[in-house]
View (cartoon, rainbow, N blue to C red):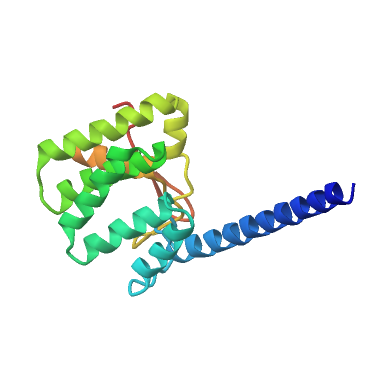
Length: 197
């Protein structure tokens, strides 16, 4: 009987330790995400520490979307375009998560649009990303991701929080030369993009 209670107590201690470690990991993940969150357009990211913090976050959460975006951003900003392309292709190939795969295709399309100007590759990766989005989300959900955000343009900068699907559809609009509809508000302009691709 004593052995039974000893095993039960040992198991409870192990469960508590695992729970505490999980809580600590979640706290660290949240901390690193806040530091390197490029989806938050108002976040001032330390470019010198971006890759270092992204790698720390990936050590805790290997398939973290924010860490992935930050890593690709770092490679692109430092002219390591082939590394960025390889990283995105590898991530898309392994399909770790739907969101990460969509982000990888968005990044590839954006690289080929803005760094290399290779339209057939832009179109290829836009199509792949949008196909995944359309399989996972309804038209209403897509419209919400793209056009029901809190992003305001104040005449100089965009403010608010974007997302991968929004960025993918903005790039599709740019590629198709489709101008957004603009709504004027007291805070600034809101851009509405076509989503029926």
